[in-house]
Length: 357
Image 1 (tube, one colour):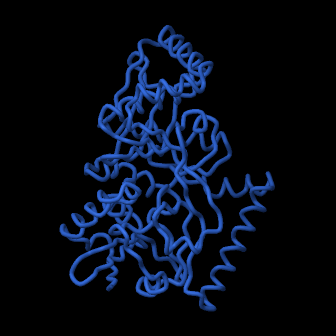
Image 2 (spheres, rainbow, N blue to C red):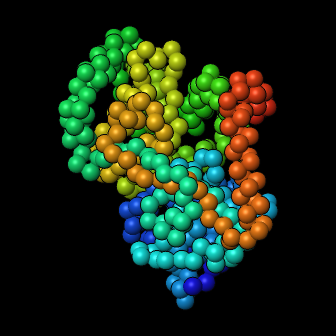
Image 3 (cartoon, rainbow, N blue to C red):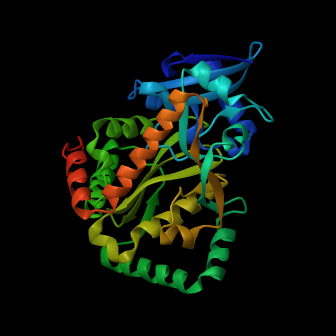
């Protein structure tokens, strides 16, 4: 097996076609976060983006998207934003982790959303987690029927809220795929306010993140299509979501709602409408992303396993880099545990305002 490292912009049409074919051959790799289009989009805004092409003879058998940082630190492509990570590979492929890291010029590769079917990377897993999912293979009616059976009171409550929303603001309707860029700006403005109200880092205070999402909104591919969905009450948008979809998976990513409509739970109403529209388009799964939020636990039908950890060359420099990472985690834990330190840190990262109208 040979490994060739490229920047994403150097991927040719043949490589992109081969990458897509490998993804489509393995359901566990169907996430749009593992698509060449996501890597290409990230590469336009992050000069650290790389792709290792694994070949047997002249045949590509794997694509490993990653970011190459200082001191040989490797991170997943789109680190901090990417909810599914790993190497896209031919069925049954095995690879030597150390040989791959050496070819990539890495001493360590750290991950926090490692997908299934990545056995060579599993040796580095230090924490297991899950991503709640909604299974749509039997259609929306089957899912909604199961939900009513599991949580009848909750479904009645949501139906009552939708009726009140209709009486207050107008008939509800869904646009599954908005095309106007200004709608995405509205979502990011709502989400920025939500981040700040909760004392969280405002991702949309970072212009490259804003630019990345605008680029992904115009992406159209069988393995990655940017999808902005809006729930309207009358002519007024009350909840929005921007995510990515492939032919099988809709990846839930950035939901937000109009705070003036919060009493109607418009975000959950939007999620249900999105599930219905996704099922009608033949999608098999709505992946809600890692997290234990109440609505994810209520709405899910199951979980997909994820791993968090790292793999290294096992050399002294790698051990030092690993110790440095552990120290950084301790510092972050200390900041998270101190309200005063947390306020200082958030002021520092939220000072720049996003270019959002």
